Each structure stands twice: as C-alpha cells, then as structure tokens.
Length: 474
Length: 166
Image (cartoon, rainbow over the protein chains, first blue to last red):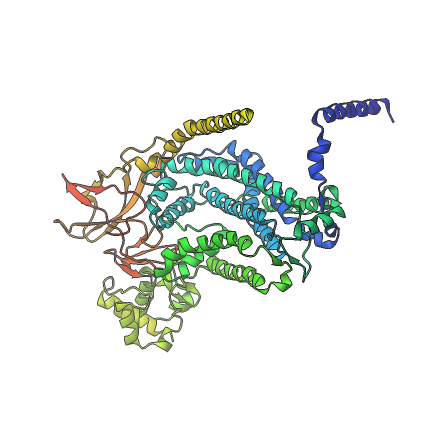
C-alpha cells in the first residue's frame, strides 16, 4: 500500500469516526435501516416487495429533474411555451431532462398502481396496517394530481383547452362547482393568473403534501413492519396478530441489506428504463402555442388519462354529471373503505376471489377504454379531407359533383368511403346496398340517429348530386 | 398538584401561541389565495369589430380582449367567439356564440360549407343557429349578449364556467 493511499485512508477514517461520534447513527438511522423484516422475504417472493421503493426512486428522479426544469421554465403565459421550446431544442441536455421528467411521470402512475395492486392482492392493507394503505391512497391522489397539473404546464393548445375542459368538469360539482372553477382558473377566464396557480400547485403545494404523506407512509412501514407473505388459510385476527408478527420478526432478517438490495435492483431498472426512453425518444413534442383565439385544438390527455377521456365520450350524455364527479369519487371512497371494511380475515389472494375481480375488472375496463381513447372513432376528422381516386374514377358529372360535395360539406369528417374519412358515423362504402336513393336523400336532408340534417346547407341540386354519388356505392 | 396545573397551563399557552402564529400568517395567505372568489368578474360590453366586418349570412371567428388583462397574460388576454350575422339589421342582426362546446367546453370548429359546428373532443355537432345537431352536447351553444353602437359590434364579457341555464 502506498504511503499516499494510507494517509488518505487514515484521514477518511478519522473524519468518519469524528462524525460518527457526533451523529451516533447506530441507534437512529442505522437502527431504522436494519429494522427486522420477515425472513420469508429472502425467498423469491421478496421480489414482490420492491414496487414501493421503485416508486420512491422515480419520485426522487422527478424532484431532481423538476428542479432542473424549474431553473429554465418561465411560468408566465407569454413565456412558458417559448421557455419549454428552448429546454426541448436548445438547452444542453434539455431534451433528455424533460424526457426523463415526462417518462418518469408515466412510470410514477404505473408503479404506484402496481404497488397498490400487490399490496391489495397480498392483503397487506389489513390490520394493523390500515393507515399505511390510507396514506398510500392519498399518495396515489397526489401522483395523479401531479401528472395532471404537469401536463398543463406545457402551455400548448392542448394544455390550454384541457384547463378549459377541466374547469367545465369542475363546474359540474354540486354547490361548490362555480367557486371551484373560479379558484382553479384564478379569475373569470383562463389567463394571466391561471398558469402561475398551476405552477405553484405543481411545484410547491402538491409536492409538500406528498412529502408529508410520504413521511407518514415510511414511518408506518417501519413502525408497523413489512407484512409477511400471505399463506392461504392463515387469517388475520386482531387479537393475536401482533404477538405472532413479533415472533416472526424475532427470527427476521435486517432490512438493510438483506431485503434492500432487491429494492435497489428494481429501482435501478426502473430509473434506467425511464432514462433510456428519454434518451431514445426525447421530450414529448409540444403542440401549437396556447391561443384562446385559435379554435383548432385536439385536447387529449397523456396516455394514462385517455381511458377517462374515452369514458366521457362513450357514456350517455344524461349520466355525465353523475359520472364526471361520481366515478372518481366512488373510486377513492372505495379505496378508503378497503382497509376499514376488510381489516381482518383471509389475506391470500387465492382465498379472495372477489378481491381478484375488484383488481382485474377495473384494469380490463380501463385498458379497453384506453384503446378506445387511442382510436377515438367518435372524433370527426377535420384534416386531410379527400376521397381516393378509385372512388371518384369513372363517375359521371352529377356523381363527381356529389363526391366533391361529400368532402366539402363535411360528410367526410364523419363517414368513411373505402378507408378514407371519419368513423363517427357509419361506413358508406356500400351504402347503396343498404338504402335506396330516396332513403339516402331523406337521411341526408333530415338527419336523425345521431346525424345532423343537411337540408339547410344543401340546395336541392346539391342534395340530388350527393345522392347520385352515394347511390353508386353499392 | 400545583406543578401539574402549572404544566397544564404552560401546555395550553404553548399550543395556543403556536395556533396563533399559524392563524396570523395563515389567514392572510388564505385570503390572498381565495381572492378570486370575492372579485366580481367584469361584464363590460367590449368591441369585437365593425358591423361591416360581418357579411350577411356568414359566421366569423372574432377575439374579445379582457378589459384589464395582467401584463404577462400574453395571448390569453383574448378569448374567441363565433359571430353569426343573421340579418341586415334589427334585434335579430347577430348571434354571438361562445366557442366552447356545451358538452365539456372544447373549442368548436365552424364548417362554412356544411354550415355546422364540429367539436374535436367527443364529436358534438351544432347547426349554425347554435342548436344541437348531433353528439353528446346537452344543450344549444351559449350565446353572448351583444349591442351595436356607432357601427361597432360590442359583446358582453362572460366568465368561465358557462352558465348552466340560459
């Protein structure tokens, strides 16, 4: 060993000893880190216990990238968009940092849900860990609130109109709806005071709430102990559980490092995935700058909210006021009631078929809604109107005129012919096989069944030509 | 005994003072944050153009400016409206619509040829007079009060959310 190295070692250990005497970490931080956890976590089942830590890792990534972004982002309506464009395209590593923050947000939502699903299926929310679950449910709420407010800070057309839509939804809340809107928008309309509110909410208010809840959550994780893997037939009874768990821990293993290494492995994988996605795909592209006087917008949320967006398109309009407020409310009331209503009994998922259904059905339903949201067949197409030449080839003069009217009179926005056009209304590729020419004329003129009446915007000659064209679609 | 009443008193004083600290700082902050609730939104008539800007039978997009926007409001100081010139003059001369779909508030697009408004979010459709033609919207487009003065078209300011009736 070289004398330099020996000297460095001596200095380091002296400093460590000096600090150690001052901090006395042995009976505080180190004691907490080495708190006993059930020995069963040594087995492969331990890999199920990593998602909370992975969520925390991504959360820390979000804080770090968020602080970095805040160094450049300007939360004012006349600058926000430009500053984001600068971050995304000109700032050194800006695209990567914004990309990490974006993919990290998606990862947060996914990991929180995976973590909750694992906890729910393992029955880990039961006595005495009910408040772990309740604080976790609030953390889910905080995560979703962060995801939503974050999307609005992009301040492009979609973000701007999303705020308008959010305000209109909030207005549906009984009694307090109007106040809620005024507070969210911070005034009469989305304007100068709105963005700063969302910004302060996103970077101070919700993170502060998350820090507080995280403190409670982690305190309880250590204080109540990590739940042992469930065994079918072993029921939680409030009288005997804690004594039994104490015995279990007496034979336990220290969390650090016997269980923590798995947390570190999965956290590293999660962070690596997020950084990799950001490095490959970069920051998500911004839309056009927010401008309330430009009505061309397609306000749709990021992918994890698409299912809810789709739901609002698909439910009967009369049920909307109930669904917009009621469904999220029901979901959270249900989450809160879970540990209150089922604090004891069977923990293993194989003995809780209803619990499996309670997890599977919402996931399947939401996946289906998300697919529907991705396709959005109910949205009229407003760009790229035109029919393929195979449709218009060989038509006589009135039918050719009719085919032009099909595009200019917006039939195309909702109806497809040979794969071109919107999908809101029926495909008209073979409409003449279903309807006679008179029936087609009557339907175009009078509307009905979800279709507007076009008698007011078509002359009788135009109506005739359009019907002539559609009658060729056999 | 005496000691315990003294301690109970000191505990109460400490908790009370801590609460007082929170209150004297917290109440002004709360008032500051809730201020928008107590400010009446302006409802002035604002000029959106000359009457001659609007050809008979046509529907046009106009912008209406906030009477006193914040200096950094940028483009958001303006709001868009659809103005339909219905008649040459008289009380039926104009119809002024909010651009917000009555379903969830997305901006509607005017299709001049087809004479319909299309909503890009969930496919709501309105006729040129604002009545519902198809889709989920529960009611006709919201109309704004307007007036013509000295050749100018003026439109009444309105706040979000759109009224539930009217």
